Length: 239
Image (cartoon, rainbow, N blue to C red; front, side):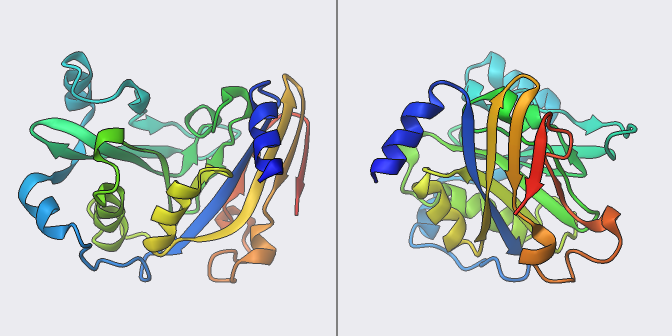
């Protein structure tokens, strides 16, 4: 506990971010209803939010601005492969009370950070892997099982029809509530990601997925291995 408080104090200086990397096999994520299933069935609808609809929701103040703008597609470059993103929300009375972004391919560091955007971590997912990020629930609606319902729809029921076998997510190291939600949905913590420094003077410690995970995910082809913070400046080491 004292170390947690120290980390949170240092983090305010924007020189360190520590996140947990989570993983789930799509076949192990539970699709069983929660104790709030009747409430969800009667009052909540879950659906994909298209870019045009997102713009309308933001202009009408029917979604929290922390949702960001997202990107529909990133083109391939010499540094990364192409990527796509989708937004899925839980609606109540035409207002979004919970949401999560899903992505494949390349996820820019600016879309995946805890507190400091310059300490964000890019990810490159192999074709059979997806990434979940920027999960949020309205504080007035927490404890209703909304995020668990979103995860079931996305991963277990394949709402987006992506047919992916593996899903990843990151949470701040100290966000135990979010970690419990993911754990209850079949995700496991497979390591911590440390990002430190400013500008070009940075250091990154990333989980060694080849060592930590089975060969079905990290094959002999390096292009099929998830890449974490591969374009971060400064020193980078796997551990």
